[in-house]
Image 1: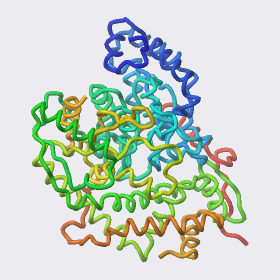
Image 2: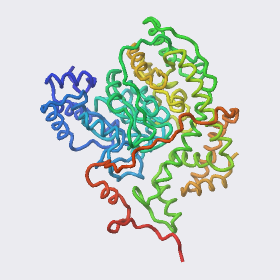
Image 3: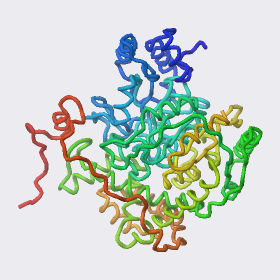
Length: 468
Length: 96
C-alpha cells in the first residue's frame, strides 16, 4: 500500500513491530493527508504542533522494548475529551479558550499504550446534533462527497479516519454520535455497553447515555481500541469491569425488527441492508423476525431524557470558574448574557427543552413517563436478546444528507431513530459498513447496526467480521 | 400549545438571554417537538417498572488520590475568568 495512513491499526502495528516502518512514518503520512484535505473537510479543529515529538517518543519507547499494539499509532480525538494541557472546546464558544487541567481516563490509558494524538476533531457543539453542522467552528464535510455532512456529533473523527488523516479515532455516543457518522463515512463505530468505558474527563451531555468508543476501519481495530480504553475507574462510579472480549464466538441467530423498518426509510438503504442479511444467512446465521413493541417510542423518550440531563449538566457553565465570562447589570444578568453568547442555537434549544420537561407542572407527564418507557424498552430488549445473539437494523434510515438540507430540528432528530435505543437501554451497538448507495453519481456509505446483550461486545465483533 | 410568555419564562429559568426572533422561532420549534415527544403520554406506568435498575451506592476508600500529574491546583486557578492571587473574583451577591 502506498499510503501508510490508509493502513488499519492492526496492519500498521505489525509493520511497526517488525521495524518495517516507524511511528514517524505513520504520522507524516497522516499529516500529508491533513495538509491536503483538512482545509476543505474541517475534520480537525486543531492539529497538534508536537506530532513529530510524539512520534519520536513512541519510537524511542519501542526501541526500549515496549510493544503495545497502539504504541506509535496516530489517533484523532473528539474535542470533548480532555487531554491535559491542551485546549478542549466541545466546539463551543463557551470553551473556545479553555485548557484541560487533567487527562480523561480514556486518554490516560491511550498515553500508557503510547498512541500519538494527531489533534482535536470537530463535533456538534457539546455533542448535540447528528451532522456536525452545529459546531461553532463550521461544519465538517464528508470525504465521500464534500457537499454532504459527515454525520455527528463525532463527525470530525469519522471524517478524519475516512480521509486517512488518522488511523483511528475516539468518539462519544449519546444517541448515535459514534455510529451515525461511522455509517455516513464508511467506517466501523462502536458504542460500548454503558459503563464499560469510563466517562471521567468527557465533557458531559447526557450522563446516563454517554459512552466513548472507537471509530476505526476494521473490527480488529475496534476490538483493540475498546480493550485498551475500557475497565472500571475510580473516577466514574458508573464504570464496570466486563469479562475480557474473546474472538471465537459464532453468531447463530440474528433478530430483525421488521415492524420498525416498514415506513420512511430510504429504499436503497433497505436494499443494501437486506442484501447483507442474505450474506449473513449464506454464512450460516439464522435470521428471525422480532417484535420490540416499545421501540417506536424510543426517539420521543430520548428527546425527553437527553435534554433533561443536558440542561442539568450545562448548568455548570455560568462564567464564574472557567470558560466564557461576560458581565451584565446583575449576577443573574451575568449568567444569562454569558450563556446566551457562549451557547449556540441548538444547545440553547435543548437547555430550554430540558428545563421545560423537568419543570414542576410537566415533570410527571414527560420525564416520569419517559423514565417508565425507558425501563420497559430495556426489558423488551433484554427479553429479545435472551433469544437472539444480536438485533440488526440499518444504522441510519438514509445515507449522508446535504449540508443545510435539514433545517428544522425535528427532521434532524429523526435521523437518530435506530441509534437512540442502545443508549436508553445501555446495550452495546456497532455500525459496520455495507454496500454503498449511489447519489449524484457518487457512492455514499451505508451502515448496518447490531445490538447485543449487556457486555456482548465480543458477539458484536464476531457478527461484524461476518459482514466485513 | 406553548405561548410566548412560556418561552420567556423558560429562558429566565434556563438563565439565557434571548432576542425576539429567537423567542418566536422557539415557540414554533417547541410546538412541533412537544407534540412529537408527547407520544410518551400513552405509556402506562406500573409500579414494578418505575425503579431504574442497578441503582446502588458505589463507594471508594476514603484516601486522597492524586489524579493529574503536575500542578493541577494551579491549572484550575488559571482557568478563573477574573483571578486575584489565589482567589476567584465574583460579583457581590447581596446588594445594598
